[in-house]
Length: 259
Ligand code: F6R
Image 1: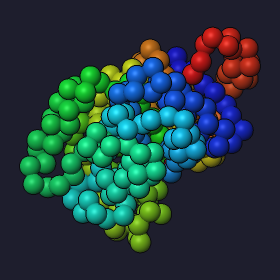
Image 2: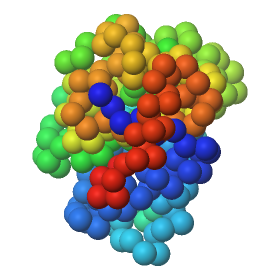
Image 3: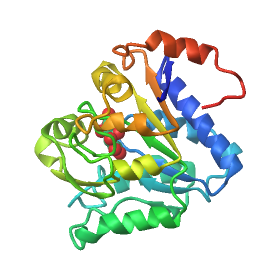
């Protein structure tokens, strides 16, 4: 099962995951990162930003998890814009090495397979950062998504559109469709790091980590992965049945066994 690390704050989570990325990039300057958007990964990107002086990220390659379909890529809330603003520019990544699924309608039927091909050509994703939706989605794989799915177009649930309305002027402006890495794509990454903060994520986290493995809660797919780390604050951990054991395990973790 996943390693669960309960931290006291978002900043602590960001620092921990940034450390893992720094180690990865020191070992391989051309490492391939899977990049999540939304609010959850921001502390990771902020912590990495504080370390750009000691680390050259210009050769790192990146693949975003998802994009809205039909959104103007220049819209401030397109994931292309978010990745440029929060990741590429502040971290000094080479924009030519960072891809976001193409959400334009022209040729949309090929954009998923093109993306899969690009990930394959890059040698696969080394470390995939994940958030989780209140309905249990990872990427934009909504409940019912196949564990074998690859990058494709999906329809967002009303719950996800309501959750994401905070980024737009109104819920009606939240696109209805998205293009997302599939659960199969995500499961092929070599290391999954799922973060979650706040009480609102507690049920989804408990389902993903301890619930049955089911397409009804797509985040539970992480239980099938040989190397999955879950970094949560106390509130997001509040419904975990084995929270005490996770704390005990982490407190007694040998120095040589890093995230
Ligand atoms: C974003 C993504 C989604 C989000 C999830 C949580 O690229 O794939 O799975 O991680 O919707 O969103 P936040 O972090 O805004 O709560």
